Image (cartoon, rainbow, N blue to C red; front, side, top):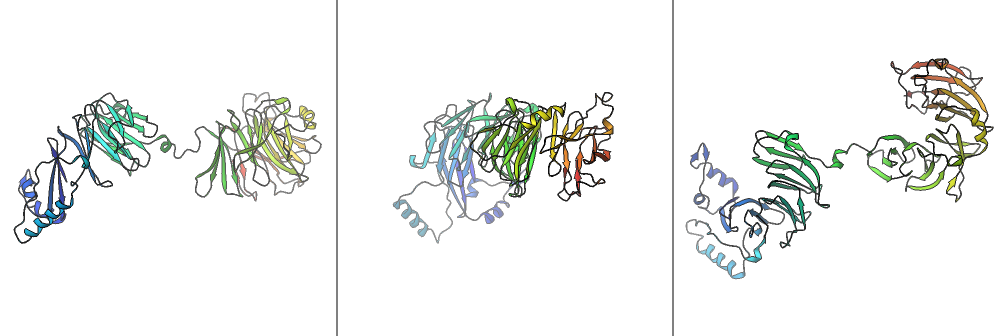
Length: 525
């Protein structure tokens, strides 16, 4: 228990708290509240009273720090602005013997009051900090070995508690006296409040201001009477005309539920390792543990400044393949973020890659990419030391007779059949071996192309129903997400036949993505 006035710090050490509280409750009341004088407090053996003359001005704040067993107090006078001192003075052997003898002589006598007179600590029992214009408030953090002070000069100072000569940091930004400080040990943040009710959040390590909270925006009005910081809620309580609770969070905490800083464009699931891979606009790839949700790996600037637009795995699921807006495709060892090879379009074109797949045909691996260049780029999966690879040339000529609009999706339909869809609403099935067109699929909803030129006819996604027998006339083997917001089910053989279609939205909005279960029993879009 502390009581302080005129620069003194009064300490009451209570040995039997329950008994003392019971006796105090029987004392005379003032305005209905039991009152106890210092003389009554010290008239017994349960309380030891110590009075230290510490400051040359009124004490502005005092705290007992259990972790270091010390009392810290502050005042607005410069020479004794902040003092860290012991509760009891250090004692030599003779002092201890005198106390034992006094206790022996008085053990059968009446209780002796333990009132102490004002006394100053020895220099070895306290550490004094000299601060310009004194210290109105402070806080201590053992974990960071730090003391923060603030006062009339509007500067927040950071100190090593064992080095009082000069501060290790000075945080400037307040325009009125600082009246409250709190150090959050868990986040290494410092919260400061000034007399004008402006709140600032500081990073202790970088010594920069992270957030400034103005009273008008927070609807804080009236004189500030009291402040309290809750470590559990990470919130500030302010008492003015009303009680306000401000949840102050760092940028990391505000984005706790956000996986990327920019929009996420695609994601993949790795069944082998039970991991999720995501990518975003700023060309960042992140790997997440599915069971815990925690990040496993991150590699940035995968395609420089260009966004990653599509991803796929190879058959083993140990290599990641990404396509980008800069027209390139890259192979990665995604477990360590190392780029294995870069695949480029013919002539080093830079049109956006919209989709890519990995497939094995006749035991040979291929990476196939499509995009705004209106071509199908086929790259053999060659294990060599070449850093850059270009597509097979025989596809270059045949694709000139193919799509006239940007290609948006590609999928392997059968052992040697490849299907692609375009922005113009057309689906083309290719013979992968010969690169010839096998069939063209044009939906009845897209026959009057000129009349519907203002509508979105794009087919953003194709799916193959691999469990269906490919040659049956009544089996739908290909699903297309469009055009005009409809889902279309095709049999790609015998010239191509539309078996069913239904609208996915009453407003005919574009379907951007689809997926299908492994047994082809459930379809989602």
